[in-house]
Image (cartoon, rainbow, N blue to C red; front, side, top):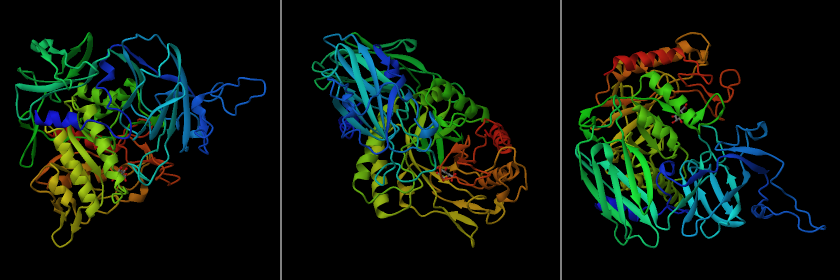
Length: 589
Ligand code: GCB
């Protein structure tokens, strides 16, 4: 109960966005505002001064207005703008989006606009009035518009800015495309005057038959009756929310547990005041025993892979159910029971689909190298992103690890910020493991051993190691002679390894500069041999499933703007390394 209260009390989300509502996908009275929106490219950022958000039309013969949304560029929402027209491929800056939508208001109801994500910063106006801003490209935010909304036609304007920034998360450079835009779903949502803002339902830590959770109401009249039911388990509870709108509960039941081979999920209904929200929720436990990870009390070896939220064939962000299925079918085909959604919270469609398919997830906030840890604003921004991620995904049983960072260099400022994030993660959710990915293991020639000295590794539950032995550094000796003595008292996951190969290019298996499938294949085999000697190895996740777009990749014949470490090419062809991994996974218990 203590954690529940802490969670709720610390729920208030950063900037001036409000806490967003749980699961818009399972609510009634929602309208997707997806589709074609009008757009203006505002390269010199003059739109705010010129008040584009007023979307004015000339009102007299002598008046002219130097902008208009109609009859020009139209962009798909959801979708990044970079992939939608050649002029925007490399664009970073301001883009204005505008659309109308019609509403028939119910007088006693409340209305909200919910954005599943906008990359990287959004400012939103409704009918010319600013309703809020949000920073961070990978988590939702919402604004209540009850007082601004008109009967009939409404005019929604969003200024999107995807400039990289020194104090951003991620910061000035990162190894993926800086896709900007309204990249995920937009909802118009109508609720009763007091409505279900949030709910949680999960199996208790270490228990097989005790579920607990809460329903949290928001409104003026929150001391109301609420209900939670799980028909298949014959659970139906009626509860009274307290004066803060909180109804916490515990349920004794014996659910069939969720696991990769039988990802059982239950229909769950949350009801209040005539409002019903439907979700599908799985129940499982995830714990540590020494260096082992236990799922439902049994050791599990994580057979994983990394992927970006990108469809390489479109050179754009993944945003639909079909996109999620395309990526996750390939994850499954490889033989995985685990994926790391690199390097940021991916869209809910992907996470929900992965849960349905039995894929456990390592989910991470976009702290990726080069973060300005000495700037006090970073802790605030990182905390907000972490809260938003955990808040959104706390009911997903497939998420087993929250990760606070990828590849950060130990300094006092970094140690202090990331340790705080680890503590915050635990305070928000004590049912999952906390991890981080490191790239500072060093090889000692005298002992033939990789070691790592990093204070952050001491505070996380699971240590992820990103190593590119055989690519960024050559194999120092034969793989079977290499020892790993890293975080040897806790589970270690090889969270990244691999090398680049251009699909269809053949060459010497021992020459990296051949960029050949044979080199990559051989490198995979050598890595797998090296892993045999890691006593605390609990899982592996090659980098990466598909070749992906990255401005850092400038080799004109072998890369052409693609990171070629995919085991599947950008056109969906499986490289030789894919077969090595697939065989390894089919033979690994
Ligand atoms: C890493 C990063 C990943 C890069 C990868 C690479 O260590 O975590 O984001 O894409 O290496 O290909 O260099």
